[in-house]
Length: 289
Image (cartoon, rainbow, N blue to C red; front, side, top):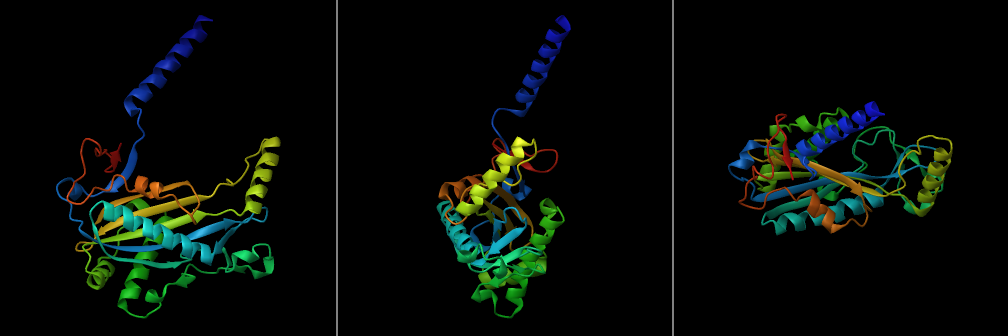
């Protein structure tokens, strides 16, 4: 009995130590430039937004890209980004949704969400090219090529699990800077999961059945939304600030407060990183609280 009590006491001490050293408040891991501690070079921002909304196929598996929903999510989230950054004092000199369907090889394509139960309308996506590009980016020219290159580089970094070492090609950044007259380029990558009422019911049923047999219930039936940001110095091509958040929420009707939370630690105009609230770790990342 004494041995057991001693074991419990040691366990409590260890847990207390972990809590004490880690702190009670959760910390946000951000990739940032040391430059942001001495000055804030961000004034005029150009925002480029692109991403996908996934309708998970229940039972049959696979991801479904619904073009109208992905477009709606891009446009809605972009407007929220503009509001948050404007409220922080920045001038938004350019803000455009680029397209949807990047990096969706082997997804299914559904152009009409009303036809969700008609399997014959689904088409397999056989490459990672964008499925839809907004008119501005349907034009041929070096600017369009530079923007698509930049988004493609980010998607490649995600695929290769090298997101935290993402380094944009300076040549592409220079072309975008020339076109937009921005001193900072903001890449806004969106992703969402959207379940119809039928899909939510199906996901819950599968989870219940799986739980009865002691198995993992599979994908969550909750709508999810993500905004991921990379702020790039338009003069040098250096990454100034990089962070994103994947959270519960409807990608077609996202909560404005969620966008404010994601960009909470992006400093306001003329302000720097605070070393007290965002100390730098030994791994080179900043841990904000």
